Length: 107
Image (cartoon, rainbow, N blue to C red; front, side):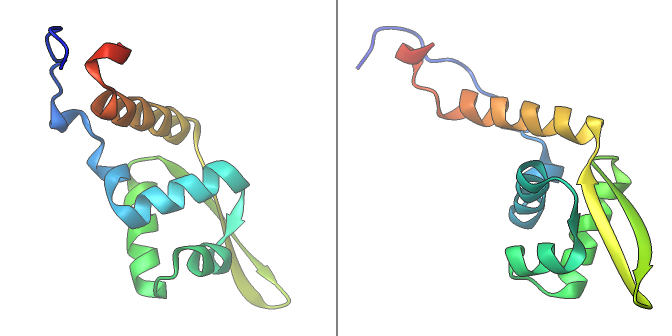
């Protein structure tokens, strides 16, 4: 054990919008892949249309993602991507989680 004082961590610093498993998965997929369509997000997250739509709407409502709707061969296609605000929030989320798991001697 180290004699150093342990860093204080306030769990309320965690962005609860991103922290939900499906939303974290969505954000990570979009950060890694860039623009991604609904069908791909559904396949990657292994969730239902309704569940995915609900999580996408939450991310859209806070401005973390943007979307564009169009038609391809008369079928509706929705493409999603992470906004500048979303990229900043995602980076902050990762920094907060790193702070949470960092051992005091690593500081």
